[in-house]
Image: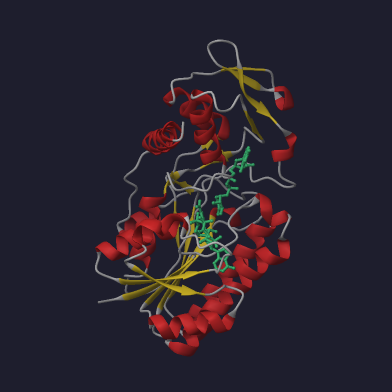
Length: 337
Ligand code: NAP
Ligand code: F7E
């Protein structure tokens, strides 16, 4: 039986990855932070199957201890301060977790079991102000936020440990992936949750930031499968994981509200842009508070390498992703009426 240690166990991706690894027969260990009120986040339903270990990415001793307890064959480093907007409020904390935390995890592996395979959760945010379209493994990086900058350090230190110590260490450069388990502050979930609340009269309108930003959105379940595939190869490498389609935030709003049975009509532009339902009631408007100090305007990934070398392909279409998220939020709101 293989043993896996997943950091960031309470998060979106860790929940889907845990389900996949448990199904494959792995013994799964999860690293979680202590909270004043016990909260297993997205893995509450798996709590009998996952062995929980308390630790923190900024605490090397706790990671060494997690390696000793789990004796992991594979480590999936998914822990991060993952919300880009907040990284301007907590730039140092973001760097401690997303940058130095990666070195801490790699050092813990090197000290306890150098043969353990390592997956680093790199991100399309490293492309930032994109230098070419679409983005692949050879595209130069230009991060646009403290989050992106810290992740770029994590990416390079992973490569460096692979080359310095001959460790099996991979980075997955994953483009945005969402799901019914996505945090409520990310734009997709904010939109699907708002559509559900507005449908049931629990909210009047939703305020958003940059409606013109373009993202390459896939479903998290497909993306965690790519993480596992990366650790099963003969040699470690880095891979872009994406759908090859890009859409504006505005498109996501339209499709989600359509699916919730509330088609929208848009009027105005810039900060005055608004969307109205069929009764002429304002349902979406722009609030400059949600704009970022520096924006990533366009992401579009080219995952040809992963498709050819890993045999990876996405199974869940964009429309299916939005449908699942909208239906899930409608169900949650309806059950709390
Ligand atoms: P998520 O839902 O925000 O989960 C992040 C996890 O990290 C949570 O379990 C969180 O624990 C944990 N964490 C935060 N700080 C920690 C610390 N100091 N020590 C230990 N654990 C800590 O993120 P996700 O969407 O699943 O993403 C997983 C990883 O992929 C992240 O590294 C993210 O940056 C990266 N990524 C995500 C995407 C995407 O579109 N989802 C794309 C590319 C890369 P708490 O519950 O205690 O907060
Ligand atoms: O923003 C725009 C916002 O916060 C997407 C993380 O998983 O993916 C995620 O980062 C876009 C941005 O995700 C609102 O300005 C407009 O252009 O959903 P988001 P993100 O910043 O792309 C990458 C790959 C990661 O690695 C990250 O961990 O939507 N936007 N209006 C808004 N965004 C938010 N959150 N809220 C708004 O009201």
